[in-house]
Image (cartoon, rainbow, N blue to C red):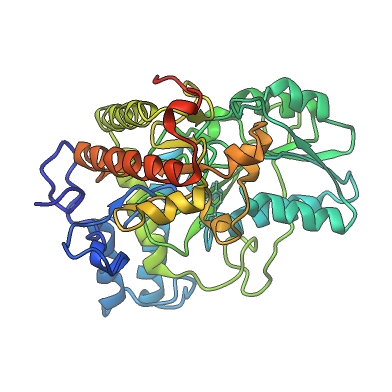
Length: 439
Ligand SMILES: Cc1ncc(COP(=O)(O)O)c(C=O)c1O
């Protein structure tokens, strides 16, 4: 049995048949052996859990579950509708929301767009100022840029060197015309966790600034309590949680407590059949939402033992990489989820390193959405990293199937590739200062 393959006997939680990794020979014509590529890009996407895939296939193949969930005039619609409602309850239960707060979308990108444009347009007479951060996902930054083009003013907060936003920065940025603050929960490149609950309290005190949180990377990695955090809007994605791609949700709070005495309102992006309380028109893809519901249900039961296992693997990976020398860990080591590790390798160009390890490792230099652009990570640049170090970083995303053997393979492959690339570039490891300490 090879490392990382389904049923691999290391300490990984058995995941009942997650997709088998591509064989190395597919990745490189030079590699003869069919050793699998170690998948360490779970922040980009996760394989669909076999139980989720099976349930989705059941819905697709069923003679009774294919109805339009909005068709109230017959049982076919009723059956599909009740599947959608069951999934809504599963998602809500996993994140501390009520089912009526869940609005289905095509993913977190659409959820972010609905939150930003929805609030901006609904409250455009009240104010046109939005606060966000430089390290948000592009699915927040691009809508912000578009709103700016349309006349809104955006304040971009700069995190500290660890990637953290001080809630005091949010308080200082609020103005009388601020209508929205959008700060992510878990960062998709460096894994740091923002103090969302403190930011929510600041927004509530302000009185008219709603808080949107992109939590696409949070579920199954750290506790998410929509009501407890006091957030108004929260974006979720199916495929980061071993569910299907092409489905997500925006949680829209119905809480009327606090100084505002009202809950957030949105202008829809899509008009049509009035589905999703007229916030998101369009016939729902029953099998997709059923898949996301089950995936969230399974994620909600992620045990602390599994989180501790991932933390152990992450420590092992960092210690192995730190031993190479001239490496730097990006982002707070304490305020972060263990599933992500972002490391700069001094004296090595990230894209060259990626190419060198590609036959053996599936990793990335940052967000999948930016990797095609070949630009240094704007997230690392926002942390104050030099262009050189920002260009020499890799993001490791650990997940349910990651084993100790995968981690050891990654360390061995990277050690070799980094030494070789440094040799070619004339930057020998001993000349490279030690930039990070294991921890
Ligand atoms: C933090 C964050 N927000 C939003 C998205 C977009 O999610 P989706 O692929 O569901 O549209 C991602 C995915 O990479 C993400 O990591």
